[in-house]
Length: 144
Image (cartoon, rainbow, N blue to C red):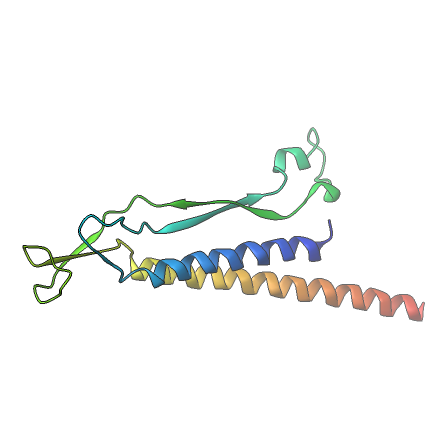
């Protein structure tokens, strides 16, 4: 698989990770009514399409044709305790004046958002570099 195709698989995975983070942030202030199903933050799990062990043969160098990029392995709910906030004036408050919100850590989600966007940007740069190298090789071939 070409470096371009590998970068494209990574772009797809990071884009999906950004969508999951956005969903978490969108639900961060969702009020959980009495007896309602609470929203659990989600995490995207990703990994290589082909294990590294299979790409390496008995101590030899990595076979470039065996590399297939990365893929989404699934989305897992995180077991997080909901936040309880004292808001006695809120119509969703319980008898003690507490409102229950999804247990989402805003700062943690924003940190993950930044880290994921940087990984996305790195893959865009790798894709651009590969295309520049291919274009330069074609240019050298024309003049040879």
